[in-house]
Length: 474
Ligand code: ADP
Image 1: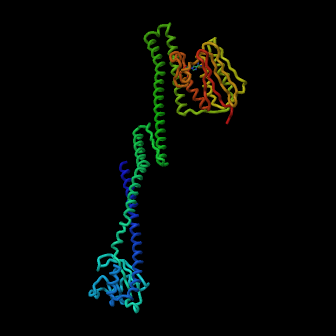
Image 2 (image 1 turned 90 degrees about the horizontal axis):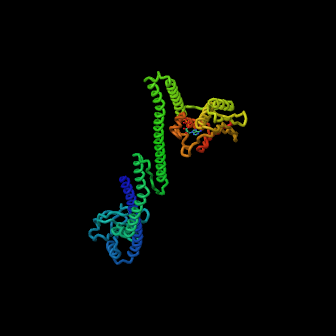
């Protein structure tokens, strides 16, 4: 992370340096151009002045004229004949004039020859400085020379930075300010948030699913990334919690199953052992013990059936077979069967239906299982009064209610009775038979029909279990 910061700093400084150097170079060349133009204009005026001056000069040699004008103007003056020979040169004494090269191939002279005037900048080996030369072609017959050339050293204009120094300082100061501001902004907008994101990703990958990123850079991309990462952590967290909860439910279920299986198995082995130890010969108990052992075998069978059933329902293995059918006969059979099973003279079992045409859309076998379970429960938990199997029509549904005047369910238990193996009163309810899975299975079946099962109960008064099933065949 530190490395990114340093890279950014390097980029900012580079940009800053470019920002500083570019205007310096630009202003330098601009200054130079401006200065050159000024000098050319000046030299041009001086060239014209020499021509006027040459007419009135007392000097009889061109060398004298060049020197005199040079003294007055502090410019280098060169007078050149048509063939290129130098006939007057202010920077040399008269006796050295003959040593000078022929100037016909100097670029300013060539230009003057062709266009009337010309200029060039060049390093003068004679005077060891850079010069700006300006040459003008004139009438040789009138003036006695063909070219007048004026030159000025560029030494003074070569360093325009001095002219612009204050300006440079201003630019440099400004750029440093820009660098500092850019650095802080980038740090706040980019490197710090990225650092936080990396740290958070690291924490999350190490298992800290409660880790959240709190950044607000105002930059859509980074803020979005943070929101997405928070979302991801939240989803992972939820999934993780769900898996943990499921694990807990699973192990609880396994514990319950073991317990439920163990109870009848130990009863059976108890009875058999007692019988083997001699009770088999005791006519008073042997049949009774065998009956009890058989009861427990049946209970075990019931439990295994329900366990297979619930695990098949919960894994989605068990498919419903929906059909459009009349449930009346089935209700009638359940009612008759219940009355037959009922040995308690204090309970009346009634069937209440609006008519005999009770068509609905559902799985006949499964609905029979649910109603059977609810009626069996009512019989199990009711000592006196009545049990009603009631059907009414409501909108596009048949609403089934199994109503009893039994022991009822406490407020504490009512929300839990649909859980697997939940029993309101563990000891008593187990004694009364049943696997503790009946309501859990019934709930699954009704939900598979796209409906819900409800319970309404008052302790000591009775309970009502109800659910609706559609009458519409899709
Ligand atoms: P069980 O096989 O034990 O009856 P269920 O899942 O069918 O298992 O019912 C769960 C628990 O709900 C029962 O143990 C009992 O405590 C309570 N319960 C169910 N139906 C009734 C009812 N009609 N009246 C009172 N309590 C009931």
